[in-house]
View 1: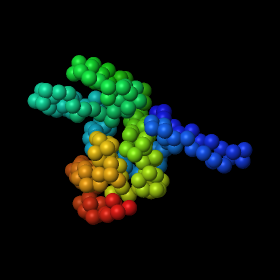
View 2: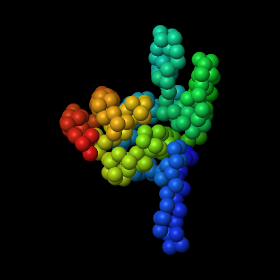
View 3: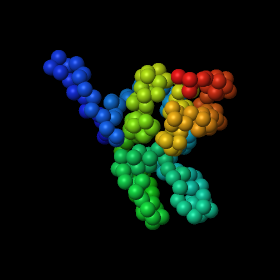
View 4: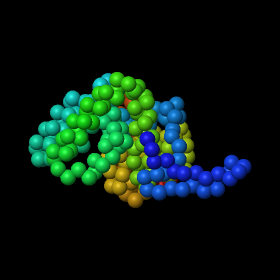
Amino acid sequence: PDGFMTTVYDAEGNVIEKLVRSGSNRSSVAKYEDLPEDLIDAFVALEDSRFWTHNGIDIKGILRAGSVALTNGGLTEGGSTITQQLLKNNVFTNWMEENSFGSKVERKLQEQYLAMELEKQMSKELILLNYLNSINLGNNTLGVKAATQRYFNKEVQDLTLSECAVLAAITQSPTKYNPIRNPENNAERREKVLKNMFDQGYISQEEWDEALADPVYDR
Protein backbone atom coordinates (compact mmCIF):
# COMPACT_ATOMS: atom_id res chain seq x y z
CA PRO A 1 0.00 0.00 0.00
CA ASP A 2 1.04 3.57 -0.76
CA GLY A 3 -0.64 6.89 -0.04
CA PHE A 4 1.18 7.81 3.16
CA MET A 5 1.04 11.37 4.50
CA THR A 6 4.29 13.34 4.72
CA THR A 7 5.44 14.16 8.25
CA VAL A 8 7.92 17.01 8.84
CA TYR A 9 10.16 16.97 11.93
CA ASP A 10 12.45 19.56 13.46
CA ALA A 11 16.09 18.91 14.39
CA GLU A 12 15.04 17.51 17.77
CA GLY A 13 12.64 15.02 16.20
CA ASN A 14 9.43 16.85 17.10
CA VAL A 15 6.57 16.76 14.59
CA ILE A 16 6.01 20.26 13.21
CA GLU A 17 3.76 19.56 10.22
CA LYS A 18 1.69 16.79 8.64
CA LEU A 19 1.08 17.16 4.91
CA VAL A 20 -2.14 15.42 3.91
CA ARG A 21 -4.12 15.36 0.71
CA SER A 22 -6.85 13.16 -0.73
CA GLY A 23 -5.43 9.70 -1.32
CA SER A 24 -2.34 10.40 0.79
CA ASN A 25 -3.31 10.36 4.43
CA ARG A 26 -2.09 7.02 5.71
CA SER A 27 -0.25 7.82 8.91
CA SER A 28 1.19 4.39 9.59
CA VAL A 29 0.23 0.78 9.16
CA ALA A 30 -1.24 -1.47 11.78
CA LYS A 31 0.64 -4.63 12.70
CA TYR A 32 -1.21 -7.92 12.51
CA GLU A 33 -0.76 -8.53 16.24
CA ASP A 34 -2.46 -5.17 16.92
CA LEU A 35 -5.65 -6.13 15.07
CA PRO A 36 -8.46 -7.20 17.41
CA GLU A 37 -9.89 -10.62 16.59
CA ASP A 38 -13.32 -8.98 16.31
CA LEU A 39 -12.03 -6.61 13.63
CA ILE A 40 -10.59 -9.46 11.56
CA ASP A 41 -13.75 -11.51 12.00
CA ALA A 42 -16.03 -8.59 11.13
CA PHE A 43 -14.39 -7.94 7.77
CA VAL A 44 -14.10 -11.63 6.89
CA ALA A 45 -17.72 -12.35 7.90
CA LEU A 46 -19.03 -9.52 5.73
CA GLU A 47 -16.67 -9.46 2.78
CA ASP A 48 -15.36 -13.00 2.29
CA SER A 49 -16.75 -15.73 4.53
CA ARG A 50 -14.57 -18.43 2.92
CA PHE A 51 -11.39 -16.32 3.03
CA TRP A 52 -9.42 -18.75 5.20
CA THR A 53 -10.09 -21.75 2.92
CA HIS A 54 -10.20 -20.54 -0.70
CA ASN A 55 -7.18 -20.22 -3.03
CA GLY A 56 -7.75 -16.57 -3.92
CA ILE A 57 -11.08 -16.92 -5.70
CA ASP A 58 -14.44 -18.06 -4.37
CA ILE A 59 -16.16 -20.26 -6.93
CA LYS A 60 -19.50 -20.15 -5.10
CA GLY A 61 -19.30 -16.37 -4.94
CA ILE A 62 -18.43 -16.12 -8.63
CA LEU A 63 -21.38 -18.29 -9.60
CA ARG A 64 -23.70 -16.23 -7.42
CA ALA A 65 -22.40 -12.97 -8.88
CA GLY A 66 -22.73 -14.38 -12.41
CA SER A 67 -26.33 -15.30 -11.75
CA VAL A 68 -27.08 -11.79 -10.52
CA ALA A 69 -25.28 -10.27 -13.53
CA LEU A 70 -27.38 -12.31 -15.94
CA THR A 71 -30.55 -11.34 -14.11
CA ASN A 72 -29.74 -7.64 -13.88
CA GLY A 73 -27.88 -7.30 -17.15
CA GLY A 74 -24.70 -6.00 -15.55
CA LEU A 75 -21.64 -7.22 -13.65
CA THR A 76 -21.67 -6.45 -9.94
CA GLU A 77 -18.74 -6.57 -7.53
CA GLY A 78 -20.24 -9.55 -5.70
CA GLY A 79 -17.99 -12.59 -5.62
CA SER A 80 -14.76 -10.65 -5.10
CA THR A 81 -12.60 -12.14 -2.39
CA ILE A 82 -10.54 -10.07 0.01
CA THR A 83 -7.49 -11.08 -2.03
CA GLN A 84 -9.12 -9.71 -5.19
CA GLN A 85 -10.16 -6.53 -3.40
CA LEU A 86 -6.57 -6.02 -2.25
CA LEU A 87 -5.44 -6.22 -5.88
CA LYS A 88 -8.25 -3.97 -7.08
CA ASN A 89 -7.39 -1.28 -4.55
CA ASN A 90 -3.61 -1.37 -5.07
CA VAL A 91 -3.01 -2.63 -8.63
CA PHE A 92 -6.16 -1.98 -10.68
CA THR A 93 -6.50 1.55 -9.30
CA ASN A 94 -8.45 2.87 -12.32
CA TRP A 95 -11.32 0.40 -11.94
CA MET A 96 -13.84 3.17 -11.19
CA GLU A 97 -13.22 4.57 -14.69
CA GLU A 98 -14.32 1.38 -16.43
CA ASN A 99 -17.15 2.27 -18.77
CA SER A 100 -17.98 -0.98 -20.49
CA PHE A 101 -19.06 -4.47 -19.52
CA GLY A 102 -16.12 -5.91 -21.45
CA SER A 103 -13.52 -3.88 -19.55
CA LYS A 104 -15.05 -4.98 -16.24
CA VAL A 105 -14.95 -8.64 -17.28
CA GLU A 106 -11.33 -8.31 -18.42
CA ARG A 107 -10.29 -6.74 -15.12
CA LYS A 108 -12.18 -9.34 -13.10
CA LEU A 109 -10.42 -12.17 -14.95
CA GLN A 110 -7.05 -10.51 -14.33
CA GLU A 111 -7.95 -10.08 -10.66
CA GLN A 112 -8.87 -13.73 -10.33
CA TYR A 113 -5.67 -14.97 -11.96
CA LEU A 114 -3.44 -12.67 -9.89
CA ALA A 115 -5.34 -13.51 -6.71
CA MET A 116 -4.50 -17.19 -7.13
CA GLU A 117 -0.88 -16.34 -7.88
CA LEU A 118 -0.64 -14.01 -4.88
CA GLU A 119 -1.97 -16.66 -2.51
CA LYS A 120 0.86 -18.96 -3.57
CA GLN A 121 3.40 -16.40 -2.36
CA MET A 122 1.76 -14.52 0.50
CA SER A 123 0.17 -15.82 3.70
CA LYS A 124 -3.50 -15.25 4.45
CA GLU A 125 -2.52 -13.10 7.41
CA LEU A 126 -0.32 -10.82 5.29
CA ILE A 127 -2.99 -10.52 2.59
CA LEU A 128 -5.57 -9.55 5.18
CA LEU A 129 -3.17 -7.13 6.87
CA ASN A 130 -2.40 -5.34 3.59
CA TYR A 131 -6.11 -5.22 2.77
CA LEU A 132 -7.00 -3.67 6.13
CA ASN A 133 -4.11 -1.20 5.85
CA SER A 134 -5.19 0.06 2.43
CA ILE A 135 -8.99 -0.02 2.34
CA ASN A 136 -10.90 3.24 1.90
CA LEU A 137 -13.04 3.84 4.99
CA GLY A 138 -14.42 7.29 4.18
CA ASN A 139 -13.62 10.78 5.41
CA ASN A 140 -10.28 10.59 3.57
CA THR A 141 -9.14 7.71 5.78
CA LEU A 142 -7.10 4.91 4.23
CA GLY A 143 -6.70 1.82 6.37
CA VAL A 144 -8.17 0.74 9.68
CA LYS A 145 -5.59 2.57 11.78
CA ALA A 146 -6.39 5.98 10.30
CA ALA A 147 -10.13 5.22 10.43
CA THR A 148 -9.97 4.16 14.08
CA GLN A 149 -8.26 7.42 14.99
CA ARG A 150 -10.65 9.47 12.85
CA TYR A 151 -13.92 7.98 14.10
CA PHE A 152 -13.09 6.87 17.65
CA ASN A 153 -9.89 8.76 18.63
CA LYS A 154 -8.20 5.59 19.83
CA GLU A 155 -5.73 2.95 18.70
CA VAL A 156 -6.90 0.03 16.59
CA GLN A 157 -6.07 -2.55 19.28
CA ASP A 158 -8.57 -0.84 21.62
CA LEU A 159 -11.62 -1.21 19.37
CA THR A 160 -14.75 -2.81 20.78
CA LEU A 161 -16.88 -5.34 18.88
CA SER A 162 -19.45 -2.64 18.14
CA GLU A 163 -16.78 -0.29 16.76
CA CYS A 164 -15.26 -3.07 14.65
CA ALA A 165 -18.68 -3.64 13.09
CA VAL A 166 -19.02 0.09 12.34
CA LEU A 167 -15.74 0.08 10.39
CA ALA A 168 -16.57 -3.11 8.47
CA ALA A 169 -19.96 -1.63 7.59
CA ILE A 170 -18.31 1.25 5.70
CA THR A 171 -16.57 -0.87 3.07
CA GLN A 172 -19.33 -1.33 0.49
CA SER A 173 -19.81 2.43 0.05
CA PRO A 174 -17.60 4.83 2.06
CA THR A 175 -20.02 7.69 1.36
CA LYS A 176 -23.36 5.95 1.87
CA TYR A 177 -22.24 4.15 5.03
CA ASN A 178 -20.17 6.98 6.51
CA PRO A 179 -20.87 6.71 10.27
CA ILE A 180 -20.65 10.48 10.80
CA ARG A 181 -22.68 11.74 7.85
CA ASN A 182 -25.02 8.77 7.46
CA PRO A 183 -25.22 6.99 10.82
CA GLU A 184 -28.63 5.47 10.03
CA ASN A 185 -27.25 3.75 6.93
CA ASN A 186 -24.18 2.57 8.80
CA ALA A 187 -26.30 1.26 11.68
CA GLU A 188 -28.35 -0.84 9.28
CA ARG A 189 -25.21 -2.23 7.67
CA ARG A 190 -23.55 -2.74 11.07
CA GLU A 191 -26.47 -4.97 12.06
CA LYS A 192 -25.77 -7.11 9.00
CA VAL A 193 -22.10 -7.35 10.00
CA LEU A 194 -23.04 -8.55 13.46
CA LYS A 195 -25.61 -11.00 12.09
CA ASN A 196 -23.02 -12.46 9.73
CA MET A 197 -20.57 -12.79 12.63
CA PHE A 198 -23.20 -14.56 14.71
CA ASP A 199 -24.34 -16.84 11.87
CA GLN A 200 -20.71 -17.81 11.13
CA GLY A 201 -19.96 -18.57 14.77
CA TYR A 202 -17.63 -15.67 15.54
CA ILE A 203 -19.74 -14.16 18.33
CA SER A 204 -22.33 -15.37 20.83
CA GLN A 205 -25.93 -14.20 21.17
CA GLU A 206 -24.93 -12.24 24.26
CA GLU A 207 -22.10 -10.47 22.41
CA TRP A 208 -24.44 -9.69 19.50
CA ASP A 209 -27.09 -8.23 21.80
CA GLU A 210 -24.53 -6.18 23.73
CA ALA A 211 -23.00 -4.76 20.54
CA LEU A 212 -26.40 -3.83 19.10
CA ALA A 213 -27.31 -2.02 22.33
CA ASP A 214 -24.10 0.03 22.28
CA PRO A 215 -24.84 3.74 21.54
CA VAL A 216 -21.71 3.87 19.37
CA TYR A 217 -22.90 6.72 17.15
CA ASP A 218 -23.21 9.03 20.17
CA ARG A 219 -19.42 8.79 20.38
